[in-house]
Length: 232
Image (cartoon, one colour):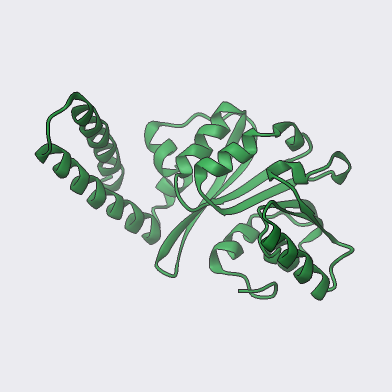
């Protein structure tokens, strides 16, 4: 992967970026996504934010080598602190982290989302944490997608300001993903079912402490919920 050839998961993120928007890519790593979006004429300008020095330096080098220094500003900053008021950022992308970490990034310095009209996130795990953040902070899910790449399955969630209400199944598995029921979705949740069954069996055979019983009950409820969706 490089600035001219994105991975499938980042192409999926890019597919939800609206034409002409001002983008802030948080945790930009090598700045491949904003470089690609500029080169393909999809965005007007971008902020590439990175908190780790190595990737920050790599992002700066890539932006300069691609000749995009006027369109992309690379900043070393923690999370949304990469966004400044006069940037007029309209779209935020965050990809390649756990869902809980992404939710915490959105939670911290959330006032910097004031001008933002769309958030596009690609969590590696725990997408439910982002859906919960959306519900708690008056953002609604307007689209979702799922892709398998290099034997791993990734979800992309698209949020816009507004109120959304979701069932337990939708919070866990995604309202749009449930409707589409793609092959990657089925593979992901069949794998989750197998792992839940394994853990429940292990807990059943172990010492019957109250804590173990509660954990087994919680996992059994999650397993039943997933089975209801997959068997529809």
